[in-house]
Length: 251
Image 1 (cartoon, rainbow, N blue to C red):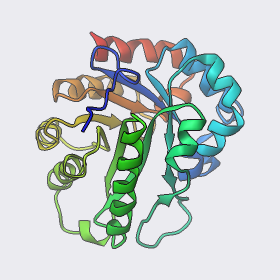
Image 2 (image 1 turned 90 degrees about the horizontal axis):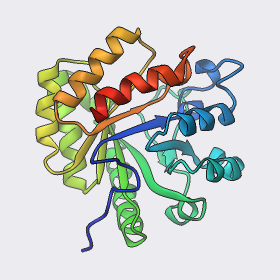
Image 3 (image 1 turned 120 degrees about the horizontal axis):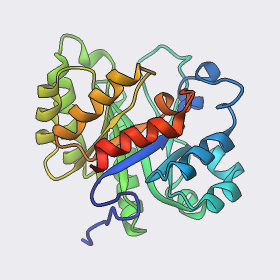
C-alpha cells in the first residue's frame, strides 16, 4: 500500500490548523458579529499562514472561491452532529470523500465517539472513508473523542490513551484528541498512538498565558501541533496570538 504523504498539511513535520466546524457542533453560541462570517476565518488562515483550515461541507462549497483564492490547504470534516440531542453521541457521514476531493480538500476528517453505544457504526464508516481517501492520496484525520456510557468510571489518562490507540489501530494518518489532564497523560497518549501523528484540539477559549503553556506541553509530549479554533477567532488579536503559538510549534 502506498504511503500517504502529509506534506500538504504539515511544515517540517509540524502543523497548526484553524478549526471552524463549531457552527454545526455547537450552534451560533460561539460567534459574534465578526467571526460568524467564514470570510473572516479565511482571512485569518491566510494572513496567519496556517497549514490548513477545517470546514464542514457547506462552507467549503459556498465559500469555495474565497478558499481557493487564499491558497490555504482545505480539510473537510465529513461527519458532524448538533449539540441539541442529549442521547448517546453519534456522528454520521454528511459528505463523501469524492465530494471533498472535488471541493479541493487535501485531507479529510471524521469523528468517532469511543465509548458510545454507536461506536461500531462510526468505526465502520471510518474504515470505508480510509479506503476511499487513500485511493485518492488524501490523508485522514480522526477526531477521537471518548464520550458515552462506556466512558463512565474510566480515568482521563485511560480514556485519552485509548482514544489515541484507536486512531492507530484503525489506520488514521493523524489523530486529533482533546486533552485537559496532566502532561504525563498526554505523553502516554502520544506513545499509545505509535507512528500515527497526534494533534491536540484547542478547546474552549482560555487566557493567553495558560494557552501558551499548554502549547509548550503539547509539543514537549511529542505531538506535531494543534487544531485550534475558538481561542484564535474569538481573540481580539488573532494574528498576534497565532504568531506566538507558531513560535512554540515550529521553534
